[in-house]
Length: 302
Image (cartoon, rainbow, N blue to C red; front, side, top):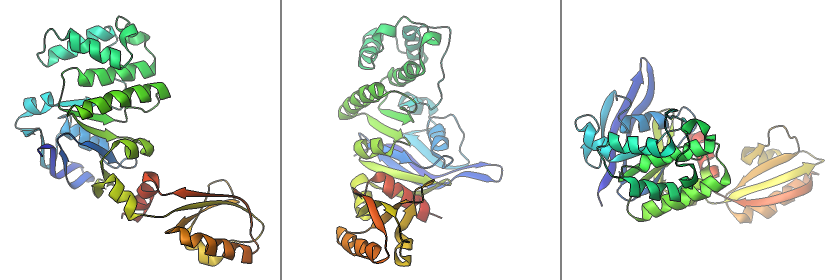
């Protein structure tokens, strides 16, 4: 399988601050890949370098075999990026904006593909509306359309569903899944970890500019097998033996979450709580998901 995005020993420094430190990862052609991390982890910096918007301090990056510096035209033709920010030209309609974007890539007579994008993103009724007249959610749909207008083999989605309604999320993911099935490589950054768990076959996690995890999604979750026992307790005091696996909900003295490695631990935990005089008012046992894995990896990473 060919490599769609090849990042090797990537570094980015702003004075003494290191935004990226020796990041190495490869995204395979046709893959649905997740790039996760807390705010300030370096995700957007990495994407900006891949897109040619930011100059790296060290390392190499290529897109579909095109070096982003030495062959920047080939790299940019191969890539479509949906940015976090709502960036638009207020003087054009939706259709005019998409035609202009086509022109940037030297593509003429692209109306059939533009119409298909407009239909799939539920923008056809807004095709002749000025960009200034659109809601925030509609503007974000246009950003997605602009990233797709030159049919790039690699599509990077940087927080594409931030602040948008449920209907757009469903419409967008249905369309993106179809593009992925047709062979397009998708790279997604998102703070909605349930989206990443459902969509991404492989996950990379960044913290403080360093790569702290890179694995298939199901393998990551399996590595942290177990679950969470969520309790609302009244009376009594949590036994000291349970404190190492406990996390209290902010703003609540009664709700506590206990991390369990296997379900066989649940009954002994309940027995300890009863012996300490704790009264259980509510109890919920939750399976480990990508959010649990993310929190634990970020906590354990230096």
